Amino acid sequence: MILYNVTINVDDSINEEWLEWMKSKHIPDVLATGMFIDNKIFRVRSEDDGFTYSIQYFLNTMEDYNKYQKDFAPKLQAEHTEKYKNKFVAFRTLMELV
Image 1 (cartoon, rainbow, N blue to C red):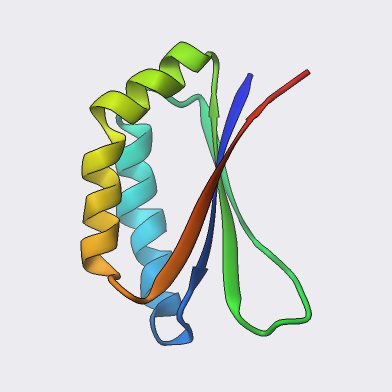
Image 2: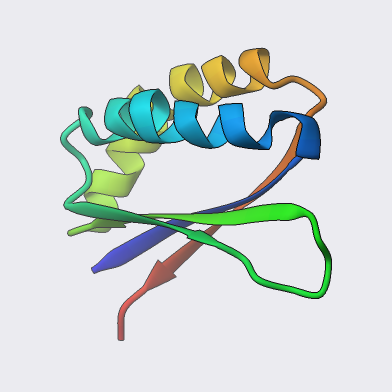
C-alpha cells in the first residue's frame, strides 16, 4: 500500500472556505480519478495556532501513483494553486507500507 500525503498550511483568512472546498470539490475530484482506494484529512495539532492539515490519499500500487502524477495531478494542483494563490504552503510525501 502507498500513502501519498499532502501537508498544507493555509492562511487563517481562507481556512473555513478552503476546508469546505477541499471536502466538497478537490478531494472528490482526486478520488474520481480512480487511482485511490481511500483518503483521510487530519488537522495537525501543534502549539502554533495556525491551520495545517495532512491530506492522506491511499493507493494500491506505485503504478497507480505514477499514473495519477502523469495524467491527473498537474491539472488538479494547478486548479488549487490558482484558487488559493499566495494563501498556502504545501509539501508532499510518498510512503510505502512495510
